[in-house]
Image (cartoon, rainbow, N blue to C red):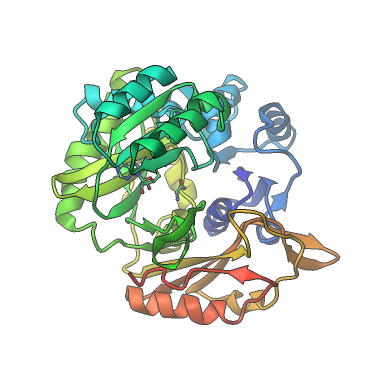
Length: 419
Ligand code: AMP
Ligand code: GLY
């Protein structure tokens, strides 16, 4: 079988690697891919948002299945367009991907179906939003409705901060059309857990839990990033919490979407906060998380190509999805300066340390090949994932490995999995 993966980050490298383990997959293509993916797949120079270009390619190469890693093409309706052409694709249609594409939509859905989440109000004009925050308590959370590269959520401790946030989003249109509406939410506290799940529209199977580290520096200091590391499983996601999430959040979300005529086939990523009143949804994503996927897929034992097929064919309940008992830790090595400005083009050395190891993986994100050498080509450069019998062992292995991988101005957090 021939599979095309859409995207080119660490998440897509992890998906490509896992697919390459399947005896049913003969050839993998990735658009656009990166220097690491290049080793196990054929990278094709098509932008992940060029839906027409991707369709032409899938037809020409007779691709058997396309797997979409990124949010933008999903929210834009890539799955609907592929299906119109009778091309097999794994991911939610546009009317289901909206759970990530519009926070106002997902909040309304949760309210209608009694799914636990923070209290909120939605506004489509600045004056009403400002009048509302003036009357409220602080801190308050201001969220741009649409996609904003993970930067559209602002936690405001004072009225001045809330005013500035609303101005940025609604008047200055910092996130473009995504700021036409805002969701203003009550501030919740508690540990955060990411639970990615396979879903076929009827059945939902959660993966092992993970914890992301969004801030740039140790002890959650510095700016928010795409994610500086993740580990799995989360110690806060106990069996009891998992059962509560299944009954009050996961199953109700799947049936709510089906009931609204928005059947969801693909990955639902639940961003959860374990509050003193129980788990609540902070956000939904309609795709695999990054870096969570880099921590989670190495512990998956079942053939992922079978799982994707079962989701597309609505046969997920017939599969017994298995996970190893290992813990995993993924540490992201980034370019110095990220998430602000940084330089690219530095040679990366020492990558061979992970070759042919069963418990160590390097997943590439911002890398490319230049004059036969692998060089940095983005903010997040690589993710180093290590497996261990317990978290401590996985953390130690990941950091020992990082010691031997080098590039100029490399930056990584030293507290992933330690807190
Ligand atoms: P989101 O993009 O919606 O996941 O939000 C980004 C981050 O903002 C989350 O990972 C949380 O740390 C924080 N956040 C979002 N909503 C809330 C909330 N209602 N209360 C507290 N923190 C929040
Ligand atoms: N790690 C958070 C995300 O993928 O959105």
